[in-house]
Image (tube, rainbow, N blue to C red; front, side, top):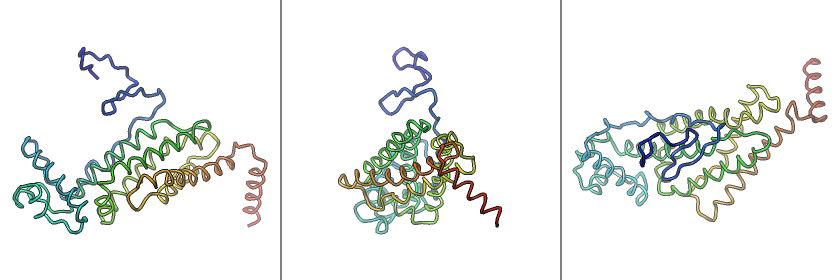
Amino acid sequence: MLCRLCNDACMPKNTRLIKPKIAVVPPNSLPPAPFPLATATAGRRRAPVQERALRTRSQILAAGLGLATELGPGAVTMQLVAKRSKIAAGTAYQFFTDRDAIYYEIYEQWASEYWARLMLATSIPLNTQNWEEGLRGTIESTYRFHHEQLRFWPIVRYVESTPAGMRAARKIFVAFHARSLNWLGPLFRAVGYSAIETDRICKTVLRISRGHSAVTPITKVDLLELIESSFDAQQTYIAARLSEAPRSGSRATAARRSSGRSSVRQS
């Protein structure tokens, strides 16, 4: 990356430009995984390139977001969006096939920012020394993102109730599971779990996380409680799996495994 002042590649390689800040990235950090919905938006016309068309498109998206927040997603029409954008309805259709296509585009923008937050929060692989701190940091980061993005909430919930939105949410889950194998997986592989066992454990942790996700907008009052409840549930499960790990040195674990093998032989 070239420096804006000296026009030279003076920025260290282990840095990332994060909005207005430059963050130093530890040598063992994970690179961001590709955004899974990069080409998933339904009903989107060809992206404009001219400045005027780009500005009109931004006005349509802003109008759709504002109206969905004020009236509810189901009450919004293309005519209302066009009126709010101060353009003809026919012009709005030149950019999006229908109202839901506007919502999908807004959802993709929200999901892109959410994915970037996830990638940053999970950039340091977990190990037996840092896993609790890393887990809590990731949970706090994602919940705070949801709180900061309250204006998107009606559209996010609406889109995820549609078939296309369900497929998009599934893609995000699958992609983040792959990420978790590199972020959370090293913790379990280090204590002796196989690749198959690690895969199963990581999926369970993600499902526990989804089970504690908010279904209504997060208020400041709820934020800390949600963070603590999600952390407690995931921390309890992970701690239990670590205590049962093949290399945990636990006699009780060895006895359970021996008993399990005996049961298999007898059956």
